[in-house]
Length: 235
Length: 319
Image (tube, rainbow over all chains, first blue to last red; front, side):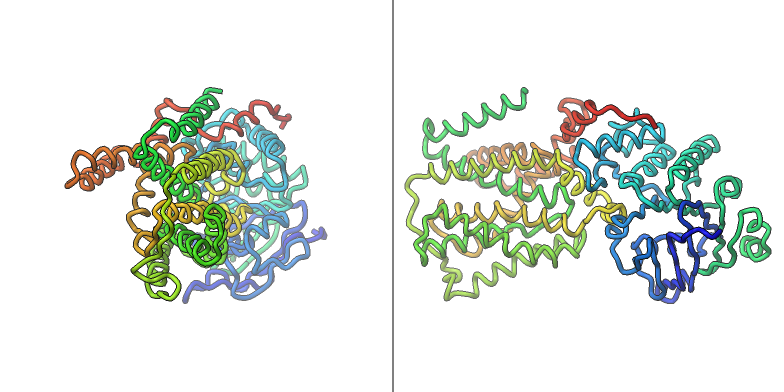
């Protein structure tokens, strides 16, 4: 690819008791690229994301983001550097309105500027009309959209998306795909976990495959989906 | 606009009450104001942030002792001594918050309860300073009005502070911590800093209030200063009115204080049981309290109107 790596993961290990969830994972994500991460359930994808986002502290290895070592830093410190995320199961603040969900996580903006930015982002994912709805009353698909908007509140350089296409209908999948393409065009680097090869083929330049806590293959999506190691891991 | 009129009327009634009422009414209102202050303070850390504290009387008790000792040994005027009580509560709350707020849920609740018991034991055991179980005596306060006005100012100040908090980013972030602390942290909310700030904020007024209460009673001893009954009554009031709301603590404090007084006067033997039944009934029928129910039914507007007003003013840019 030749582009500057924005995120570099080197030999990351994460153990939970006797279980090694991530076992020496090494990979990198190029600036302004879209990278996919696939792997069977339990292969360590979400744990690797949690290590990158600071939710889990790696037992070994190093994670560098924008040239700065970030392992050991708190999630809020990592966010400040420019890394945002969405969750596998949506985690909106249910008792707050959609707008409040976004404004609550803004920093470095006045209230008026935070509201303006939140409204712009909600309009971008076409849920502006829901701004005063309680988050707990939204459908699953709407929550996914609001969560993407919320993750963009502090203009991240890198957005980690944990299964953004899971559990929603193909029409909404296509909508989310369109929004992600728009973000990519605006220069946001995307790193996403998903199982939907149809979508990954569409948007990703590189796909990483994980199994038993290790990165077992890396390459273009159509190469990865035919890779015998990947096929062996899935079937 | 109507809110401002109600606030002004309430302010005028509170200001005029001691001038036109019997000593009994003033004394009752002093105790009511005390609970209003405690309820609003507890609401900041437990209602907004979701860290249910069963030991907030620690700060009340520390304030009471600090203030009494300042009056007795340093001959400081009682209003200043009460402020000293508040300062001590804040000074203790900051390091305590850093430690205690590492605990969550029931562990925090029980930890705080244990802490109040530890402070009570300290007050009993450190007899050379606190006179232990005998307690400390102050000159009697013949005129309750100065104490009344200071408590009223503190109570109104807290209602206003809660209104500002409810409409601020800080308040929203506290609510985010209440709903999903790990999620909020992962989205860049500095949860530890905010929790400690809320904890310290919630300790200041009980510290001052403890000092004023000692002056009001002219006496302080460990069971009065660190009373679990005061703690539980405060919690019941906020639960009744609605946790994490602007007016919930006020409604809870007024309704339960009046209920206590009426039942105590008419059924002195069984009033506590009746209050208990009333609270249990409210919790069963309105688990989130009166105000959230009224908001859900549309009888009252939802809080956090400032953000809504900003939203109606802003023009969203093209996607």
